[in-house]
Amino acid sequence: MVRILCHSRKFIAAEEEVERLNDPAAAFHLARQYEAFEKIPDAIRYYSQARRYSHGVRLAKKYEMDSELTNLALKSTPNVMIDAADYLNEKVMRPSVSKEYVCMGYIDLDTVVPHLRSDDAQG
Image 1: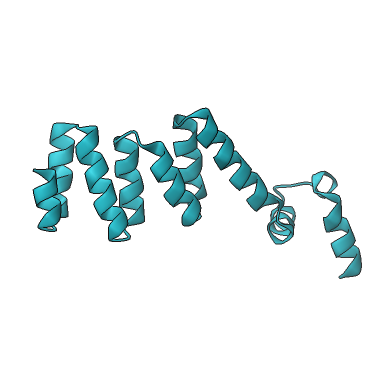
Image 2: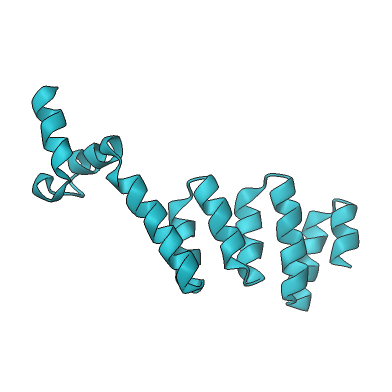
């Protein structure tokens, strides 16, 4: 039924059916449809409901939805957790992002990677 509703683009009715059925396969199908229509927050929500966390993680990384990424990664397999942690670590360690964290007070300058100090000395 969810497939028929999605094919007819009756997404509200499809959501209601997914909730009624509480079926991971139905939630997964709806998530894929939302992803195809670039309704990313909805897609992530239904991937999570389908317990297909790696799909949600993939979208959260692609669209830089870091809080969703963290929540999904914590529910996922160790490999996905490590991948998400590596992504977030790389993102924070970019010089421009690190400088922003220092300016906002989230990171003490003494704990930031040494190349930031040399950038500040040059600029």
